[in-house]
Image (cartoon, rainbow, N blue to C red):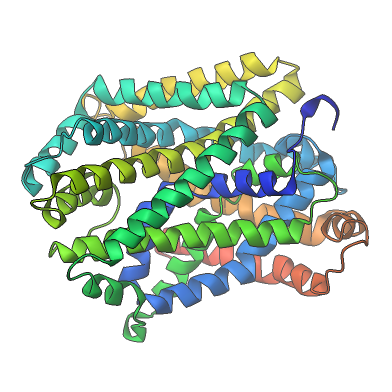
Amino acid sequence: MGSRGNFGSRFAGILVAAGSAVGLGNIWRFPYELGRNGGAAFLIIYILCILAFGLPLMISEFAVGRHAQSNSARAFGRMGGSKHWKWVGFLGVLTGTLILCYYGVAAGWTVEYLFEAGVNGFAGKTSEQFATDFSTFISDPMRPVACMIVFMLINLAVILAGVKGGIERGSKLMMPLLFVFVLVLAFGSVFLIDSKEGLVFLFKPDFSKVTSGTLLAAMGQAFYSLSLSMGCLCTYASYFRKEDKLVGNAINVATIDTFIAILAGLIIFPAAFSAGIEPGAGPSLVFITLPYVFQQVFTGQPVLCYIFSLMFYLLLVLATLTSAMGLLEVPTIYLKEEFRIRRRWSAIGCTLFCIIIGVGCSLSMGKWSGFTIGGLGLFDLFDFVTAKIMLPVGGLLTALYVGYFCDNSQLRDEITNHGTVAVGFYKVYIFLVRFVAPLAIIAIFLNQFGLL
């Protein structure tokens, strides 16, 4: 791979790719979707969606990225087909960059709450105070911006250290820590008094809640949870070694991602129900509901409450950072290779761009709340455009390219390691990419706009 660098081992590559997938969506979106859509029934459908189109699309991005050994935009022009397919890769670069612009804002919130947990700032507060504090914080013109900048500079420091010295080393440190924290927190939550109701809510199948909407929710969660079409997987795959088994890597990444999401549910629901609270979704769950839950669950045990809160918000920061690393690496390597800009200046330029846009997204929660486009503030607008339009379109185009237009022999060589690895399901894989994945993505896309 020359001066590009590569991951030192297959295990490192899996950790890095898994870190890209594991993020805030695992902590606050997956558990809620699981509980709202029939518990274990939703989990079964979700796993089927992972197998039907999530894994095939991940394997496809891995194959395209490793074959090209280049940034995402250039990669899609190197596995046969028209050179115009490079715009699919560029769409991934643009999508990942725009996601980082507002993702960094939410990441700043985790930094603030980690600080609050560290100074024991949650002690003695009521649920109303937590709601007021969060509302006051995100509407403040300075504090959220300052927290976002701190987070983005930490992320930049990792990327500046390079592929092996920064991304790989950071993932080797943060992912094991994340696993330890999530296991300890889940274990502690499960053994709380009155946690049974939360476990029932999470894992007992309730097929009466399963509707066509449940299927679409599971499909959407599978698509977004695996970081598909953000350029991250394709870019990281370009650092994989030639002897790495792509199918095995994809299976491991999907397994780790799902495992973390389920454990997040084990942290949240038993604790919430032990406190007599049914958790809501989104930011209110982790920044309003859970701080209050921790206070209620550990009444009379301030040390345990402090430790539990501190570990949870450190877990959130780690999960957010492992995702943000991939989102920043995508445009950094793109600028370096396409415009011959030194890696250092590419990373700094991308970070500054995301911070500037992020300031606008943060201010849209407060001072700029009156400025809207299509009825949406900047934060919600970036979320809407990337999550509901750019990601599904990118996923659909990826499936069409790999399924119909790329060089099939080159694709087979990548997936089977030039025939040295037997992949008996190759025909099944091609069928899923050509037919199941496009139909699933179209269904998700139409559902986003209430057309299905």
